[in-house]
Image 1 (tube, rainbow, N blue to C red):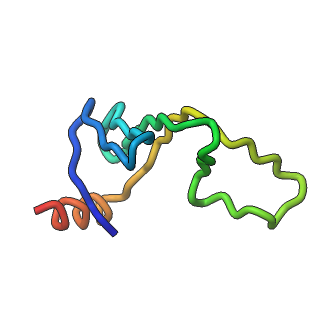
Image 2: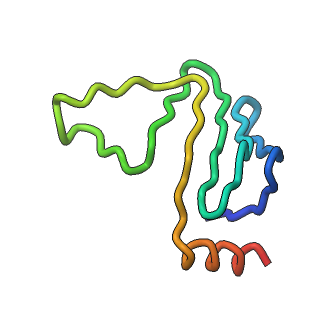
Length: 82
């Protein structure tokens, strides 16, 4: 896994057409904006597809994702970034 440090407002570009931007950092919560073509499916990692038939999955073209990190995860990421 590639681990990169980004500050609020900074972007990561994946390939030619996917952009991630760190929208907001507040304590242990990071909000990430995603811009991608309509044919690129974007899902939350904890969503397990196919386990429940009553879950309707709608891929998004643009999304904002908020990630909560505990103190150990924050510490581990800071160590990896050095």
